[in-house]
Amino acid sequence: DAVDQVLRPEPKPKIRPVVATGDNTFFVQFAAFRLEKSARETAALLTTKHAQRLDGMILGFMRRGSYWRVVSDPMPREDAAALCRVFVSVGQDCIVKSLD
Picture (cartoon, one colour):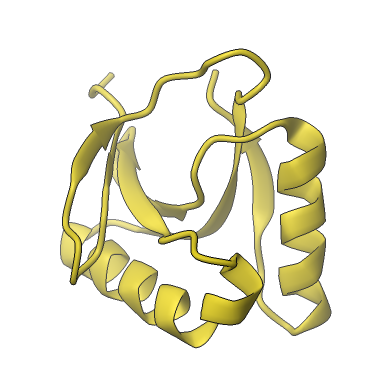
C-alpha cells in the first residue's frame, strides 16, 4: 500500500504525511478520484467555496490505494462528524473515515 500523504492545493502546496496523534485519527473525505489532478483541483475548489465553513482549514488530498481522496486535516471523531454534518446540511457529500 502506498504511503498516505496529504498534499495541499494552491496557493499553499505542501506535502504532509498523515500522522495520527492522540485522538486525531479521523478525517472527513469529500471526494475520491483516480487522477491526482482531479483531487487537487477539487480540494482547491471546495476550500474556496466553503472557506467560511472550514474556518481557515485548507482541504488537502491524499492517495490511499488507487484513489486520490479530498480530505480534511486529521481530528477527533466527534469533530469530524460535526464538520461532515455541516457540509451535508448544505448539500455537500462527505463521509467520516479512520486513518487506520
